[in-house]
Image (tube, rainbow, N blue to C red; front, side, top):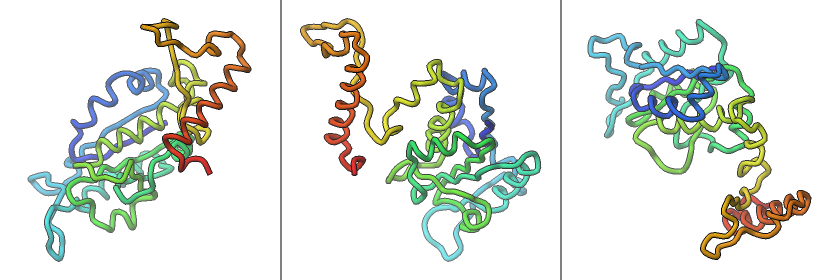
Length: 224
């Protein structure tokens, strides 16, 4: 898989992809992540990527020209399955959406900034808009990192135990059950006996019951 991220603030994306699981995935050659500085596609001497909005109003708007030039340049090198725009009014990121995107080969993620992008970008260049929640960030960089992380960890070979992602919260529409590790008794706080029993079918039944119980308590909307 290849993920190209377009941003006017590339340094914000250095850390998320230079450590832990995302770095190992790149080192293994399972994914290529490239961050593109939008300012390099600006045609004016100041390398600006924003301008005042027609009709007035507070805040600046990201210009269409550098965005179009960048996307066109990338598309001249390969075919992309989706061009994603990080937007607070986009489709809310879910595990199901992450699963879908993890099956793609090449993705472009466009990070918004300021008061957003020229609407013509959304009308003509974007194939899908994604939001990571009902709130507004200073820019789309952190959202892009979240989306990329949710996708990359699902790729075969990224996690040491490939069954781990299958037991994550939301994969089966439920919150994950409680988990415990050693010691089995700490200050009198004990691990449930069933988890120490070695009886796998009973353990799986317990996990399913706890997942349902936790989901009903914490995220009842997930259970129809």
